[in-house]
Amino acid sequence: MFTPLFYVYLLNDTQDIFYRFKMLSYTEENYLKIIFSLSYPNSLEITTNDIAKKLEINPASVSDMLKKLNQKKLIDYAKYQGVRLTNEGKKIAIEIVRKHRLWETFLVDKLNFSWDEVHDVAEQLEHIQSSLLIERLYKFLDCPKFDPHGEPIPDEHGEFPVTENLICLNSCKNQQKIQVKSITDDSSALLQYLSKISVSIGVSIEICDKNSYDNSIDVIINENKNVTLSKEISEKIYGVLL
Amino acid sequence: MFTPLFYVYLLNDTQDIFYRFKMLSYTEENYLKIIFSLSYPNSLEITTNDIAKKLEINPASVSDMLKKLNQKKLIDYAKYQGVRLTNEGKKIAIEIVRKHRLWETFLVDKLNFSWDEVHDVAEQLEHIQSSLLIERLYKFLDCPKFDPHGEPIPDEHGEFPVTENLICLNSCKNQQKIQVKSITDDSSALLQYLSKISVSIGVSIEICDKNSYDNSIDVIINENKNVTLSKEISEKIYGVLL
DNA sequence: ATAAATTTTTAGACAAATCTAAATTATAAT
DNA sequence: ATTATAATTTAGATTTGTCTAAAAATTTAT
Ligand SMILES: [Mn+2]
Ligand SMILES: [Mn+2]
Ligand SMILES: [Mn+2]
Ligand SMILES: [Mn+2]
Image (tube, rainbow over all chains, first blue to last red; front, side, top):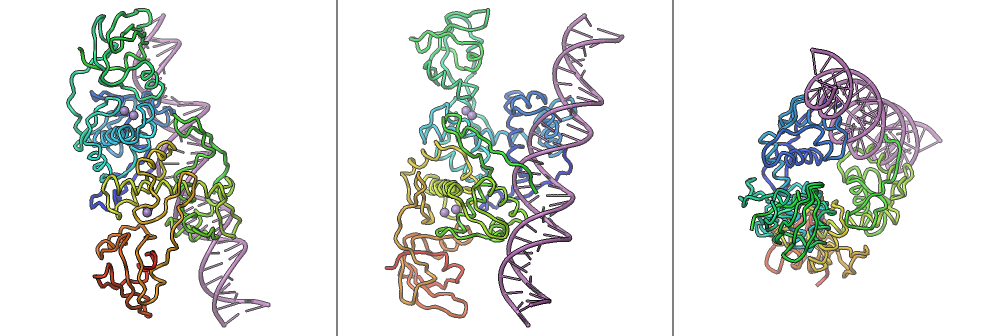
């Protein structure tokens, strides 16, 4: 339940002459980001429950927020009909993704974080409001195109870098071999495990055998390490065929 | 008006084994920081109105929050009696000051911000929760002792660097000359003005004349620039006698 | 096509942080 | 020592984002 709605026009940076059209809360930003990442790369229709699960909150709360974001014209939403970002909502979501991935890159490249330590901090840093900051950070990092997990970083205009056609390890056939290009889940448990078994961006993985019972696969990592990967893990690993 | 109170025990970083004793909100952190800076360096008693003015909110709101912080044992507060930080409250406040000043240093030293552009961004960054982040940032910046405005940065144990005895430009006599060591106000309007008249950390300022009517002073900056400084400005400038 | 299960929305409540208006306490002025 | 003024606190309301329980709509299964 919520009632009115009004737009707040505020200075972004005191130093900036520009005004932000809509000052969004930390929470609203997170909703937009989640909707974007659930629908990426095809702007799929997302359900209330999808969002509730991802944010680990009650679907009732999501319904309320969707109404609000719809009024702000950041999403297209009609009761029971699912939700889709508007162009404006998508633009904001991409900005947040950009900030998240730039901060992760900063933490790894400059502060020597390991790839499993960065996500939670970036979840906070992505909400810092300063266009100057993100512009300068981008240059400081030499305009990176991919984050520490191989995920693409949109440029200042919201354009994602063009990438080779990635295929999921999970969808490879026996004897096929890929070079790892990205991990599509930043959870520290997964990333720590991958480090343990020597999987990182750039290594090769060859499929030896597929077990149809649990959809696990036997693989050779970097030509020298035999490991069995569960479906949950293999579907998070993407790369190019070698 | 507020009701209950309970402590939330939460992981600080997912990577950390340590627990934070009290998870404070952004707002609570700001109250502690303000109380600290208003009472620094002598732990003076601070009034409700002081805080309300600084935060630009209603004194009634401050009263509520003081009750809450008192219950959390972060301040010593009794109705109508003013407020003082407890040791625990002071420790947290110093941590926030540390983070603020380290971020300002980062922005100037690494991202080429000017000294008048950093404060507002640091107000946001100081609330990022990650002990690993601040430890790494500190080392990345080579353990700086002073921020871009010459303000001391507490070390990892909350100890401020020992400094030469600073005197306020405002309290100098005619013909005295100081070297600027710190500016005790980070507002961009002041800092931009100081840049315009070539005042920065390290420059010399010699007092030529004091105007008893409005307490303005005529000074020579770096031996070559005559300027008249208002009381509001001269009382923000500190340095050592030359 | 109807019933059962699932998803989504509404209704009503609550906690945090703020506000305004009114009451209370403290301080300053006569 | 009263009175006037200023500072502070209480009372009650509001906004945001959440919750639980119940109602409504949609989807799935029979
Ligand atoms: Mn991440
Ligand atoms: Mn990532
Ligand atoms: Mn500052
Ligand atoms: Mn500063």
